[in-house]
Length: 306
Image (cartoon, rainbow, N blue to C red; front, side):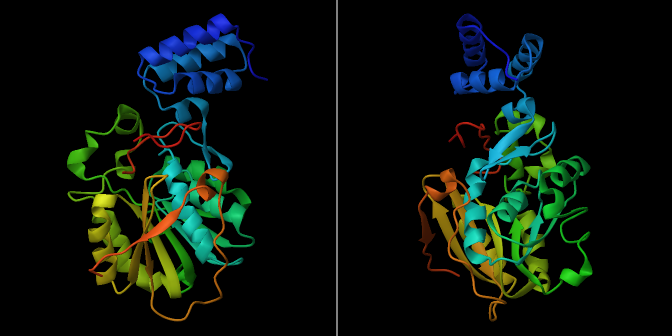
């Protein structure tokens, strides 16, 4: 049961949050009050947030794709913009599709897609043991979560059968990690943020292996930044996949969709919204002549910050 907080207590909490740099102090105060069981718990949660802990880590959850996703301290917080990637996947997959979620973090992407499509065969993997523990709670009976590096822990029987390959890889260039907000830079694992010198190191590894795991006509979906989109497109094309870039101006999201040539394993389902926030955004294809980063922290109530 939420704690009863007087208007004076709430006003004081809002002022302290604002002084600590919380842009959406009123929304955050309302969330903290709604989650605290008693005044002592509210005070402890407020101190953790004012000290700089991400709001999602203080609450223990993040809103994603219409779900309340558990997020443990030290685990990457799913960004609201990434709902756009899940929406694109939902529009390409059919019920019963074989889905893999690489670099799954909390498991939010796979869990949201499983909640949207019936009967998918879901496998997720992450190299971080804390993320794997969190993902197993969020995915539950909807799929299996494996601990290990990228494709390495996946069952070999999935090779050539994956119809949707979600890969929300880290794509912040190494030199830019120190420029991220402290919530990300200090409290999220660097392995979930740092994409190497140009931000594309992990994508290169995924793209190199993806054709061996994708079914003919299967799709790799990767989130990237607008400035990296052309190079990300070239990277997957060099691996033999056919890329296109789609973007949402509203969610400030850019996604590369790379398809293994060949007939699709089954007819694609119609475009399926994942949540009110996601379905409200308009997607457009970015046309190119040649074949925000993960570090931007949202709040559960407001979505991504610019």
